[in-house]
Length: 370
Ligand SMILES: Nc1ncnc2c1ncn2[C@@H]1O[C@H](COP(=O)(O)OP(=O)(O)O)[C@@H](O)[C@H]1O
Ligand SMILES: [Mg+2]
Image (cartoon, rainbow, N blue to C red; front, side):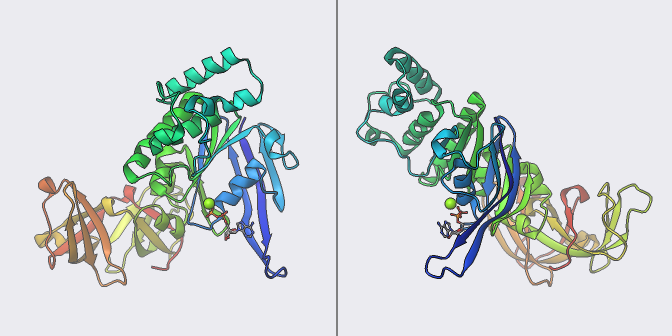
């Protein structure tokens, strides 16, 4: 019951200039397993909606294959693909009650009244919409309307649920609640889901795996943990949260097969990274990615004994954490975050601090540009 894309490509022809072609989706391949929740994440215009429309059948791929539940569906029309789409605008019928909206798909298929009633009641219960059955959609909150839209999609028991930025219209607090709700509902029904969003926190919360896209290309596919802590390249590192890039040089590669890589940083500090496959050789210039919360700061006499040192140029107290910017002579300041400042102390603007991190928290990219 999964979804498989094999080298799916979409080339649009510019209407005002038919000679000009534009590749919106470029050889996208992904195997979404039965019951899995996979998100396409990327900036606006990177090809997410086009990919989703190709899965649903509303867009025809220029090349490649689309498989749903083990069947090649390139030439199958949308209404025969056994998918259901949930949009950003709720697309519920204003003139029908909530219950009628939820039961609409069953009504269309001519199911018996009693059966529809029972199915709708069950669905309303799971969706936390109990007792709202007789209301009109305009008497519901945004979150409730979104749950009605979802209930209406799920009640048809599609093989695949498709979501296009379904939470974008909700305010921030509701959006966070609905993320968890969506995940709970998807897991309750175990429906294979393909989700599109430009919001990285949303993708992290709901997904089993994330496909990061940029300009029509897949940049990386992985679990939220892999994407965040082991980004495949600078684009992914930068797009998913905040990150520091440090350049260095491999001084001791893995020669004995241990997978250890020793890196020397400008200023002479060295660090050994255990178990990093033998893909680096002596003299390679690399970029290290380290998240702000993985940096450890120290002040006073020990500042100079760290891998890097710098001067605090900005310090923002946010209660549970302090955000620092530290100038170490590079182009960009280093970003550091310290949680629980009451325990870890504060550093003041103008103070000299040492910067260190555990090798485990850092990730090596085989690129040298800072
Ligand atoms: N029907 C179309 N004709 C021409 N260009 C299109 C069409 N649909 C989308 N595009 C272009 O394809 C690119 C990807 O669009 P889209 O898939 O909607 O991106 P996203 O959902 O990631 O924001 C955009 O540059 C968009 O302008
Ligand atoms: Mg879109």
